[in-house]
Image 1 (cartoon, rainbow, N blue to C red):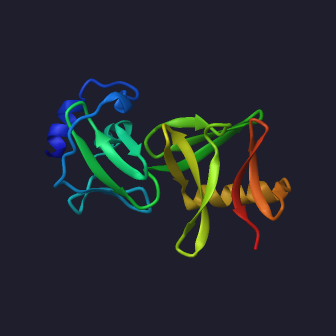
Image 2: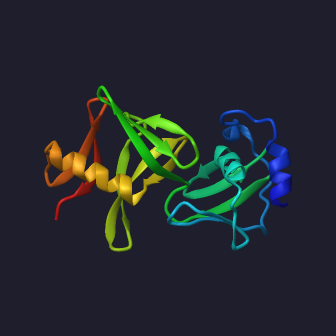
Length: 176
């Protein structure tokens, strides 16, 4: 199994393929890794082809607490430091917050796509559900803009900061 074979297996796919319906054999030996900054690696080498990374992001699947790239014929493990998607921008319209990922995917913070706090390196950071049990983390710049938004609007409840979208409170942090 190699990157060229995965790319060939996925050619012609549009949107998100039905990876949850595919059950190919596990193919080990190749190492994919997504670091804390959202950078993708294959066998310790950075993957610099943005189109290829975007393609891979459409076939990532989470089974229990493990991530895999899944094609109709292969299932390849992916080690993920935080989450596969990185939130790099947002837009506020009416009472919605639309988030934009580093993989050119956009979604609205809502009842399904909400946030949760996790412990990471002796601090708490928010993750957000992006799609199909797959999460994203906030770019530091976006996170600090959300903190400013919460403080400016007094979105504080029980020492927790949140942002509002679809009239729901999405927790982004705690006040010490």
